[in-house]
Image: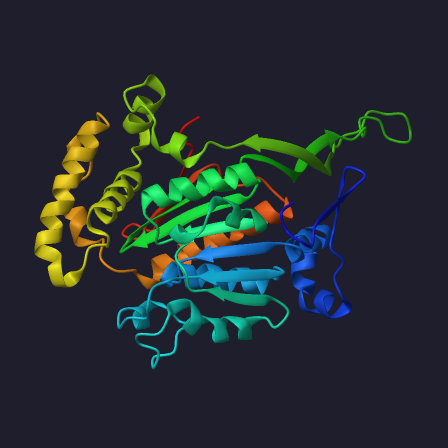
Length: 354
């Protein structure tokens, strides 16, 4: 484990002990996922990159869950637009650093969690910087930076999450490398009620006895680069396109490429020009992937501006839940993309790169 609070003794993970006050505060969670899971969570440190709307949702959920510490990293300044979807910032803080503005209200959520701030960009940090954390969660980054962060996390044994919201469209990517977890499995067994006490055959149907046991499992993850560079002309991915084409995935790829080319996301003020560029990027990108361009209609450009609050809440909730599952080592995690389209309210999971 990379957290300073987690140790390895005699080849076994040593869990952080929690105080009586913590046990009282996290009582409902402990009843839900168990004391050991809460101890693992309490010993974890999280780096959250990007304090946009979805970043604020992730921070809220993680802090309330009871991690040891969280670092809010953001080099951007508070804008008028932030006031519409970022609930941590003070409306008087226009022009101030977004992470600094978020810290006070974030800390009020849970005084037992250490909330720190880093006002530098993730791009200014060497790979070794990220090795000190249990989890790195990146939002608002370019695709090249996400690939760099993922590579650094894989080397350091750090759990990596990436995600973003583009209007009604959003995505989450998870790379846990080699991950071990526990899962409760239900099985049923027939009881021997075929003969009653008198020795006569029973008229009742055999009763099914429910058994619940915890099973240890492992799963392997692909890097972000491997997950993105799939061959859509191969038989497996052709079937994916025919059966349930991941429309939101391709829209997200277009928007990430838009950010790479312009250094920003589409804006209402420049929407006419942005629509043309988005459609051009869509055509070039899908052709390069050997995917039918008509799969992504021109209308997607109408719904990818700003961060839509309900979509931020959905994605932020899913990301935080998966981070908690990964750190606590409880239950099977998503592997490896979660895609959510706010227009139809549907989310989907796609495993790419395997």
